[in-house]
Length: 169
Image (cartoon, rainbow, N blue to C red; front, side, top):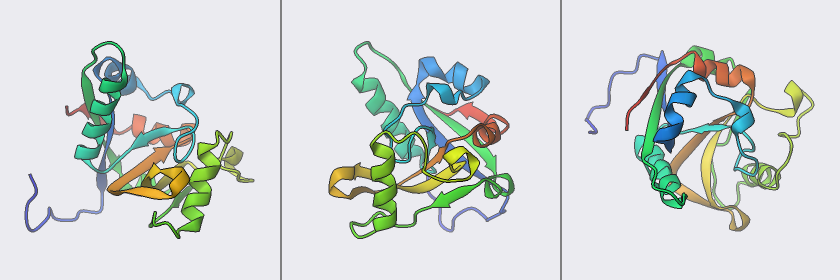
């Protein structure tokens, strides 16, 4: 439930959510394995989270509906230390509007199954990418009020693996 005013800012942590299937929860809570991540996503191969519980719930339900067998949707919450998050090698996109060329160039690069983010440093990857969610990437359309934080390196997922995590749905 939303409250007004919002909770007091403590500057210490943020809760990130990951929508998945109940059968995957134990393995994710035991430790995220990037080798299981899929190519061709908005920001490339990685482990995706959001700051929005409702968005993670939607992703989990969508995933459950796409599978042939009946599967229970689930959401995992990670309480992440903001200071540790800020030390990751990251890039953030504030806008996903049609004319946000930097964002859409990056999404096109990643969606075409690029092997990395095209960088000279860090093995070609950013540890963390933050930005809007593409609804129709070929048409440059974003999903309004959705966000994503994707983790692409062992260094990045170790932050999640070391965070307090639990199933919330």
